[in-house]
Image (tube, rainbow, N blue to C red; front, top):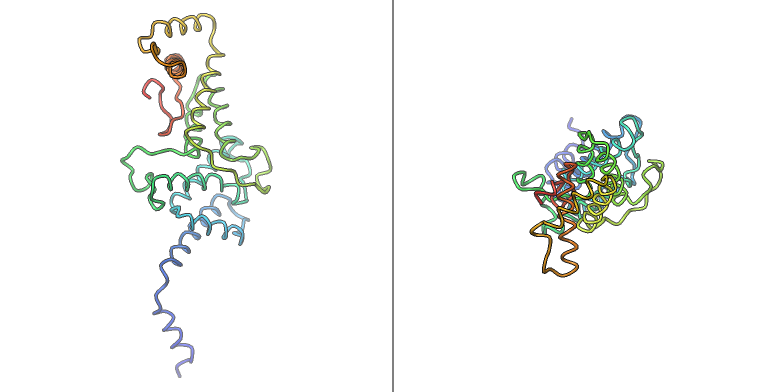
Length: 261
């Protein structure tokens, strides 16, 4: 005898799934799987985490982009605290970076477009999250003591500006969502701070050489306004320092040699 529940079961199986619901479910499951893989065994996915991931989905941030943001933050955390450091368990800790990336995509005019995913041949437009992750690689490859100090301080500035919380706080403590920083403003501040630190490391002979270079530089800003000349001298100084230290500086398109910017 056929069970009474079979017709209903057949009808349910034939009912199409709402595409919006399916997209939401796929997104949340992708974020959940990534988060659980990051945290390892003994960690559960809470309703609060699900609600937060749902809110991210509502922003239009692609799942692949969200996963890369989470992984970038883990990379920065482990670089700063060591590979064995306990990772933040609260999904809210990752939210400033996720919101920053969503804000970046909205500036492009299409929240569904992730240039790092859909246009790999195009020069990527960076976010603070990606700048921090890439800087960790530059620090690991560096062998200059002075430059290592400058890179380390820059890492702290960028990471703190993004996270908006004490970097050495309990990783599982509640985190107040930070306002995503404006990348162009943050980049200029970091470049100025890097220049200041590198200048402080010059000896008398290097300082004299830099002064001579700025005096005879053909594009030092003669005829420009005071403000424009100041900016021009800052860029020339940055380029001279790059010749001495070989460092890279943050830009809107990633880390670049100042002599090529």
